Image: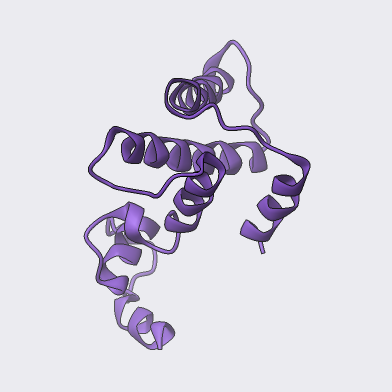
Length: 127
């Protein structure tokens, strides 16, 4: 059903940048209010909430921290998949800062502890 909807969005000139990135399209097609409510990021937020032994409540400081962790973890995963590693210069430094902000949110709000049983659950997010 989504393929039918997406076919309506294809432009005649396929090189036109509409500015409608993947997250924006997901918000529109899924009928949600925020990028964080889409099926792109919500599973990562739910996984963070499970690790923290808390419920995700969007309006709280903990909810904000879970969104930051999810968004930054996703960005870091894409950057690493593109061959970028944390470092001291350029894009490597940007990745390092992204990771540090996610870690900061964890240490100030949750102190998540990743157990070996949790690592096997992490792989299910990528399937």
